[in-house]
Amino acid sequence: MLLALLTRILLWAAVGYIIWFILLRFIPRTYLTWLGGLVVLAMIVLSFVDPADQTIGTIWRLLSLPLTPLGAAIVLMASALSTGIKGIKGRQVAIAFTILLIASVPLVARTLVGQGELAVQRAFEAQREACGDICPVDIPGAADLSRVVAMVVLGENVDRIGQVNEFPSSVAEDTSFNAILTPRLNRAAVIHSNLRQQGRNPFVIVTAGPQSGNDDERADRENRIRQVLTGNGIPGDLVQIESTGMDVHQTGRVVRGFLRERNLIEGDGSRTDGRVMLLAPALLMRRASLTLENQGLQIIARPTDFYAAQTPGGGLTARLTDLIPSVEALRLTTRYWEELLTSMYYFLRGWLPGFNVSWSNTVEI
Image 1: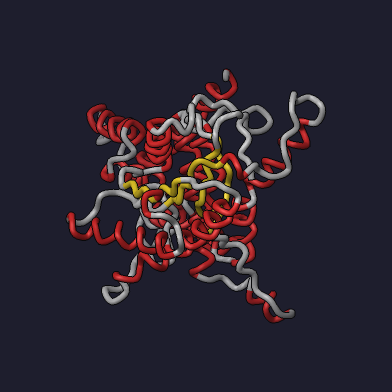
Image 2 (image 1 turned 120 degrees about the horizontal axis):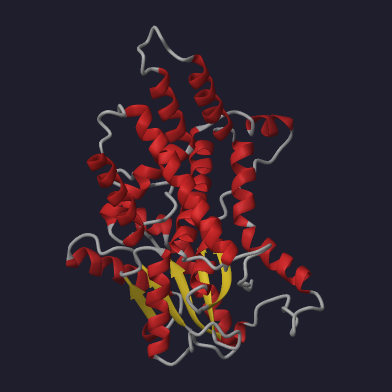
């Protein structure tokens, strides 16, 4: 507990120093008055007090932008041009070029994302190995699916990872739902079918994201989600669609309240409690599962959307193309970096469990 508190304090100090340093690079010290400093401080505090507010979420994204590959390159190049074109600072340009080059190499992107996507599995295996003869009971090699009381399909959230079709055309707007969420729903239906064969009928809770659009648009979105699930054999009375899950932390609160109202879980963190199966993109699975575990839910992780799994096949030519910079690789690297920043954000808020050598909570797989 003490180590976690000290780590949070150091991270707070580091984040504050970085933001202050960046502000001083672009705002003259004489104009960066106490009033301006208080305004900036208030914005930072609000971004941690109420992250479910989309305005505050936007502020967080703006504050963390310089810490992403593209944001860092923009800040460095703006700094290099601060004295005019004739006085360009070559060092800042060189650093910006290096950041963009490395972040745009597919091999680098897949390596980073691959580590993030396998984080839950590696942490589980490390926990079992470290436990050894010390733990009072053995950690099973596979989760006991007979104890699953609910399945949570993580949909769109404020702190989501940007999707491939984040900027869909007007023609494709009607199909953006299918491209993002339908594969996840289909996998949930397959798992639910297997659980029913074992005598289990868990609820399927889908977080449909913030309440955007008018009532008819929201109702249509929820109906489409319900149709995909019921069309794959899940009874309609077991489907619960939540639109209040603005971020993973809020999603956990909603799910915990829903299950406790129906006496399906105690929600006190006991390992004897019922299990909640979480279906979410592999890259954010560790943060999502640990956040829910920290709220007293016992999680079984079922990651989806493996970006790093799309490795090129073939011979030397295919491997060489993996070294050619691309926009897609930059986007993938940025996804990884944004997830890293969001995990730091969650840790600063106290939404992730404490840790020493490894996380204190064990997520089953």
